[in-house]
Image 1 (cartoon, one colour):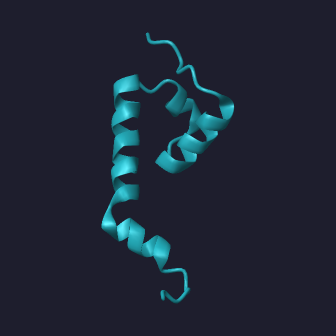
Image 2 (cartoon, one colour):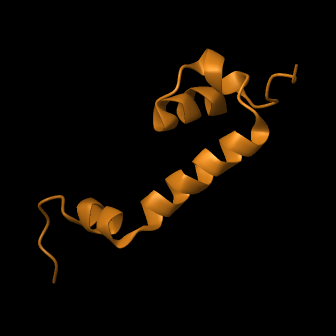
Length: 62
């Protein structure tokens, strides 16, 4: 059995919310799966569609 992840409580809470996974599952998730999910989050955050939705907050662009 693998050891729990060595991350801070704040990081665990943030990741569990971002990944929509219970903290208990996150802490025992294999590192390679966690890294894959984090890469997917990063790719989604840097995609053009994500950038448009962040820019579209009702503010006019010059």
